[in-house]
Image: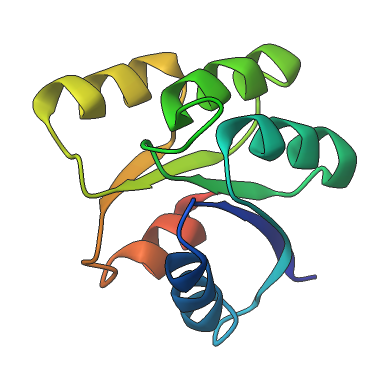
Length: 118
């Protein structure tokens, strides 16, 4: 069965790009969000297998959304996809429960990261 994915990024272009990459593999994008609050609401509504979260988004950044998603479901599979790969952001994301951190726009390892999730 195909795993389902929710993409949360404030850039429509980035959401479309990620969707094109993901859907060439056995994954189905079932939802998109343009800000952190919408990401949390879509997570609750759609219950995707995997969530891709940007960090810089309006109305709640990706780290705040990650924290809320993990509170709702400690087993949620969240991968941060951000160009802000500072040591602090990567460590914070992993500490808060992210399964991986992918640096935009270097998506060579994106499918490998998705495949690692059980």
